[in-house]
Length: 385
Image (cartoon, rainbow, N blue to C red; front, side, top):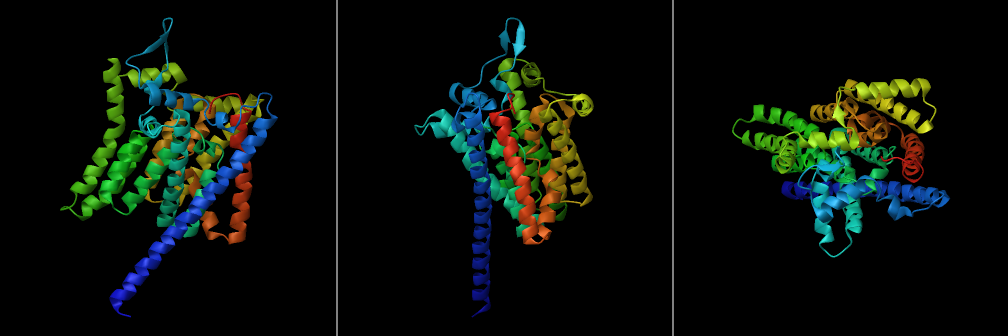
């Protein structure tokens, strides 16, 4: 066999291995979804007023996304009496646009919302696996998928929420940036920034990833520069569009504050919640949320001590600052942390290096709690995620 034939054969095996690796990641993802839906069905059947699994997956923020998809955005503020209310302009456009596109095929918008969420979450599983594999190896990539999609509140990956598409886009952007496919990184970064406000953190991470490439090749510097600029434009572009539509440059921030009490207060409300809950709290869900927030901080600290790839660290730190630094519903914060992969890295790396049996047992124990916890919050806990 010639050298060229040997190279071709090696590339073929590499591609086959990559497909098998992605297939395993999708299989792990599917197991977490099936297990969680079974648990959700069990808890729903035990509820005083069973709604059914489908209806449980279409609650809370799903209604806002569906209204944007079906009716479009309003043209101004919404008032009840003289009181400013939250409205659909608070929600970024990528997910509703995809719902509308799929619904145009002739299926109900609610079904389209679930289809988009589920397909995007499959893409997220593949992208997370590729990112973990690129940085730490295949076993860590699989562990990262298992830990991510069985985490507490990972049920949002089955709901009509935007977390699935956001994670698919941000993980895909990081993979593209790591492999220096700048056109893909820029496009994915731009879409990430138009999916959730924390897309701003992803855009900054892409700019950080672009810096070494700019220094190494002045002749091709326009490629990473363009990717970073396009991604960084996403969030400001949407906020400016909302301001133009309403006639108030601060419209998006006013709508967020009026509807959900969301405002950046440098962590004051989070510290107040932690202090009150851990000293006088008498409800187990708020206490568990407080412990999750503290555990995520500790995990992020461990991850940073291990010196992860800098763009991933930058994305994680900025995203966590945005989550912990803002006022709002405390019980939504674990959901907002789900796509922050930095907090999951220490466990995934440890599982990737452990003996297979130890890793499987440890992740299974984590999944048993995480999958039940998310299903409980949707079926039993009366407040929005």
